Amino acid sequence: MRLLVVGAGATGGYFGGRLVQAGRDVTFLLRPARAKAIAADGLQIVSPNGDVVLHPQVVTTGQIAGPYDAVLLTVKAFALEAALADIAPAVGPGTMIVPVLNGMRQVDAITARFGAKALVGGVCKVATTLDPQGRIVQLNKMQEMAYGEMDGTSSARTEALHALMDGAGFLSRLTPHIAREMWEKWILLATLGAITCTMRGNIGEVASAPGGVAFATGILDEVLAIVNAAGIPPSEGYAETVRSLISQKNSQQSPSMYRDLSAGLPIEAEQIVGDLVARGAAKGVAAPLLSAAFVHLSVYQAKHR
Image 1 (cartoon, helix red, strand yellow):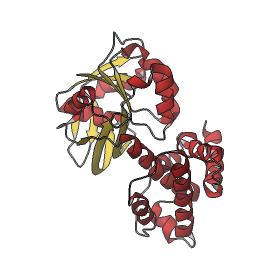
Image 2 (cartoon, rainbow, N blue to C red):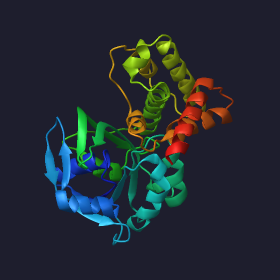
Image 3 (cartoon, one colour):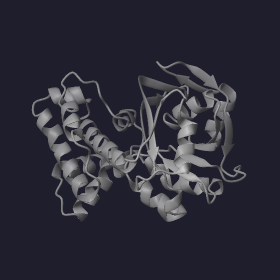
């Protein structure tokens, strides 16, 4: 199976790199500057799971010669539309597009452009960042990729995708519950992002502040109310797991959106928080705390656009 990984940033570079390391047929679609840097210095991963320097196959926009069997879409959510235009030459009648973006907008966007058949659901869990040298630095040992048909059915194509992913150095799962898992990840990211970015502190710092736990759980309750009305409710016990996580006063947890905001980088405010607020409003679900968080993040985004 030939896989095209779109982007070699913190997420795509990590999982794509591990697949290359395992000998899989992987090509990266990159912007010219990133392609030039990797040609010169290699794709470098610094990780508690093992450091590696790789020299993968790379193409830039306009160099794609034909369809791939699968496309792993790993760009930031605000770059989705540009990425879909870039991958068009790589998408044939049998190509699977597996997005591991935050939020759920990618489902509608991919379906609208390439048809529902092209979409395979995906979720990844990894804490990585790019350092000033362009190296992918993994912050802890967590590394998981899950995927499956959005309707929960089994298929030969997702079995083939699993064969590609399995045994590549990270936990890989073919699941019939991928749609629910995508919504669960959105619950977690929206909650963590709204809490930490609004209050400018990690989870432990917010939980330790007067009224911090009440604020954090209030955000979670609003997120859950929206998802229960507009999406797929989480599995049993998931909400309480998140509630416990955001109440820990010694926690160092901070999502990538907070790390990006702290570094003065663009953030996925609209895709992670704003879209959820909009979906709640369409269902008549009030979310005053989440709405205030989105205003706050929008002001930041406007200054850094």
